[in-house]
Length: 221
Image 1: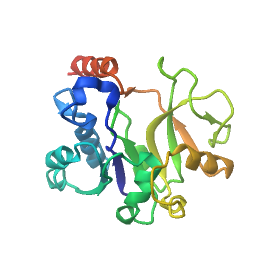
Image 2 (image 1 turned 60 degrees about the vertical axis):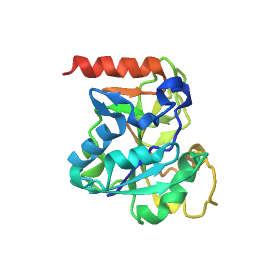
Image 3 (image 1 turned 135 degrees about the vertical axis):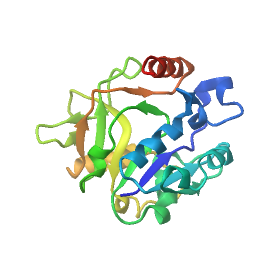
């Protein structure tokens, strides 16, 4: 299984923190956020990663290189500016992703989720769902009794970690495209499963949540 790390966002809510560097390079526990994901993906058995790039993407490329020092290979999908959003970025990266389901990870989440849960066995398209944080109290998706993602409450928050089928993106036109319409179509076909995760997870989208993540990392050292 290959993985794709979404790293093209500008991180505008971070203000001055991302004036000279992209959000995935903000450090937590002495390590850039995106590097946490690369290390954990390598430990889970992932051998090939695709990283999409836009705002100051050259800095991300300079940090991660070809991936050899992590024991894997990294390919880059350049988007230019503005970035193409999630589905648009996946469409752009399709030539690098292959034909099998791939693991998708948002670079701006801080989590101890064990990627091996999704890597160790072939899996249908799957979303990881977490309890709703205070900044997103209404959630995104439900989960029915058979483990399929639904639109029926109670709703949970999409964790920014998923297994997706690249074939569902082949017919999409290139350009800026959000992911939610693709997920909604998969839900309607009852082909999208979900798993709940109650461990460490933070959407590092603001300076306040970055500070919270850094405090949690410091407490665990």
